[in-house]
Length: 51
Image 1 (cartoon, one colour):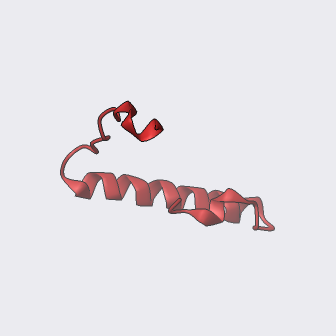
Image 2 (image 1 turned 120 degrees about the vertical axis):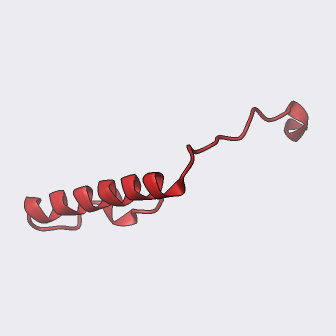
């Protein structure tokens, strides 16, 4: 979790909390834009790990 501060409501003012959410959204979007390619999820795992 990259933005742990958003997991709980530590802020006293709603405007500060809103600013933190906006900052996290901007950070996430910038990371996606600068990556240069879409994120790839790993394929399905085999059932060998169940044993």
